[in-house]
Image (cartoon, rainbow, N blue to C red; front, side):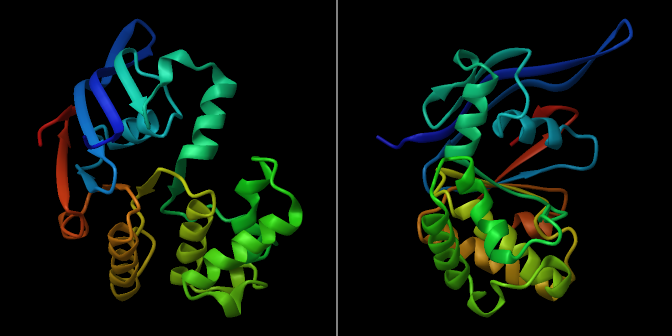
Length: 224
């Protein structure tokens, strides 16, 4: 039986503005199996960000159920959600979100600090992942000393270092030129072939074509 890493069942997320309820996500159901590469595709304002926040355990559904790697998020308090994010989900952001004035090695090692991993082991694990992504000669460089593509590889290394069940990539090529973006998508495909589960959020159909499955979202509804 295939294990679901993401399981959303009739998830709705409402936001209240004064006396008006605004539905950002409506009755959304989604299953992502271990080893899949799924693209969530939709224009600005379609609900992609809300869906990402729910799957990433950064926001809770108003109704419905959300289970990540078999854990129902409704059973967790805020500390439990933080632990689930730390151990189960690796995030890759459009804007890289690297720590300034901090080397690539320390950027990648940082998530392990929150897991209580000792400094020597943190640095060794970070160095191995950076080497895997072709950045062994850049481990002591800070973000301004790296190209956009190298910064995004550091961000992916940071997402991988905790060996998460799921990589959640939000517009991972959005700040890259077309050539570097193509290289980044090739890297994500390679990681997926090695068994990494990836959910990618994008507005670009050409980027979405890199995934093995596409799920479309419009007006807060999944319309796969």
